[in-house]
Image (cartoon, rainbow over all chains, first blue to last red; front, side):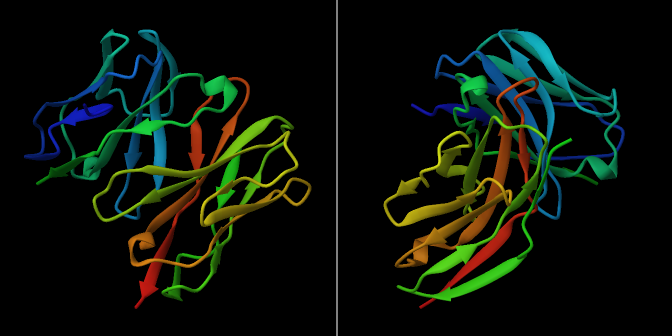
Length: 114
Length: 115
């Protein structure tokens, strides 16, 4: 009965590879997000989708491409992985962000690029 | 652009004591929301408490309370009767009521509880 689930939890891959992280939420929320937490624990928004439409695209390299097949899923595909992409990636969802409702986070995916 | 600053990278407190974590933010907006999230070693982000900027009353959740000073743009978190399970990274976050309603996070404060 996990609310926001991400797979995989850990991902170790070589530079230059392409990888995907999947996210699913069973809360019925319209808005989903990807956040990146760097090695200093700093969390920053990458993307936001509302009902399958992209509404936030921060200054993220275009090697990162989110895809939302339906409003319960938001996947993150990363091409040509670089050492600097190593981080923890969090998926989150919110019911009514304009009313200040909280964001519910997945457990994070620790990506290590070697 | 909004920014959130947590000036205490690390704090420690004795079990059962009270500790206050500081947070300041910068915004030109009048309508927004503020949050404190906890991240234990498990990595899971857990909401601790939430405050609407239009409410003067400080939010309280059991042992957790905030001191919200809108004019000073300050939003500190007080943890009373600290417990070992409170040990975690604590993040202050801001969300606008308009536009792109993303969460803007502070740098985090690592809280250690000494038995």
